[in-house]
Image (cartoon, rainbow, N blue to C red; front, side, top):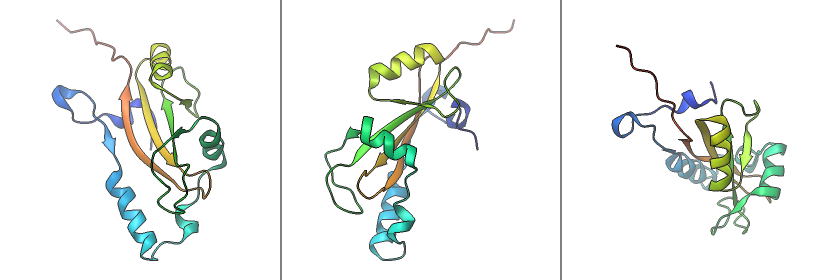
Length: 139
């Protein structure tokens, strides 16, 4: 599986890439956890680097964690693309994403929901951002 911009090419209006929302998958996992079919170890397994980003640059959400029910749920956003590090680059807001896009062109963006308390994490959405380079037309 690739995490580059090509991995998110989707069917949008007139060939424009769209946004992919993982809300249904999230709700399914939460239901399975609440039914006892998944343990806390199954769903609270955030990578240490993701936890560091969540604590330092996570954007707060106005809802409690769906697993431990504490306040403090955050989102962490990453961009992957040409001229960015292979591990991607974390960004905090739209102005920082615009700066990354100017430098790297079109980037694939991933938004992850994270609870710094219990280590819950879930990919919430993916989308493409930045400028699309126009291809030269053939005569």
